Length: 44
Image (tube, rainbow, N blue to C red; front, top):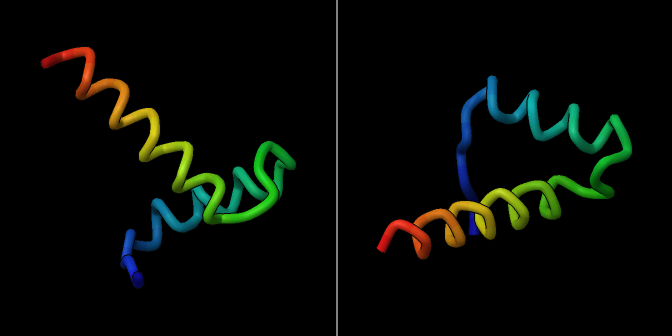
């Protein structure tokens, strides 16, 4: 899967990896999508 998230979000993802909070860009995106899924489940 290839996803274009734009420069601003790409910079944010990279900063999360650089800070050491995540090891890879994929980890950041997986966590973000997991949180979105949880939020949507709570609202339904």
